[in-house]
Length: 488
Image (cartoon, rainbow, N blue to C red; front, side, top):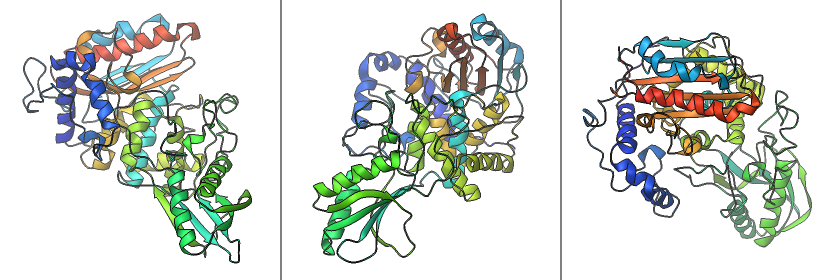
């Protein structure tokens, strides 16, 4: 699979370097970025596409080609890389004993096939770098502008008809616009989210207009099938609040309204929140909510719509959102094989990758988030998926690349890579992966000569007491790619 040069990706690479390495980076670190991010969270018409976000104040973005001589040459995704130069840059970090006895990795130019540098062979547990694969396949199947609807329908007649709350698999549906949401990791872009309180208000307005003030309430989460808790996860993940049971209907990603842990039945919890909101809006709910499947003859009442998928992916990758990843995996299953289960989703992932010339290379995936310790992935697969996402034939996949956290500045890398080679900070964008005994990184880097490369690094036998030091060693290896002169 050959890849054309993407103008936007060249812009992204140059912006990465200019924004975070040039003199303006000092202002960024001293607080301008915080003001910029705060503005995005306000009401000042935020951009619809995260990639359209303007740079922070005081940072002048010059033309991309050529990039400023004081920073780097224009990024070249096709230029040859020197295997020996890459090895000199990363070997001492990847050989750190804190990483354990199984470290594998690959580095290559963005465009082309194969890898310039390979460390080790075979597959390893990828942890959250799995989200890169899930996101790319979801965007390919559904499109960047795809949205998910949560709706209400009315069925039956008489004085107390049945109102059904129908889940459409919106991963970010909120209980209200004031709800706490998502992970604690700060994001540079927060999409406008749908909420169930708004749906209740719209539903109540339509019901009253038709003279209905009393209903029985049902809730329908039948869009997804299969177990809500992946059998390949550790048995304590859900009880310990690591992840929620995955359903097509929830609010606040299944988090408990108390702010601690997850609810046991996210669909029922969402229905109860909706019932309370209906009552606030003048609709009486008779009895308790019941689990139903809406009939084909039901009448549409109201709906709310999620952000576009590209914005969901932006948030998902930047903060490493497990629940959202698992929801997208089920949508992959629906779109590819007509079944909304995690198993069908994984079959869909393999189907899409194979159809696009991305071999599995011995990789086996059981979930969409990387929580399963049974997942196995080759670094080359991650390289191929990053190249797939950067291909100008697939513009809908752009969010996969533009969402990658920037080393030492944003998302899950905001407090990482600060100890590595200083020139590497800001020149690396990567998805992080962390489980007990596992640390991984996969993303893109721009070296000092403007060579644009993709990389994937995985260590899955890390001694638990050395987890922090292992993560630092992995970070230093990635930062070294941005700080080297790796051209051939």
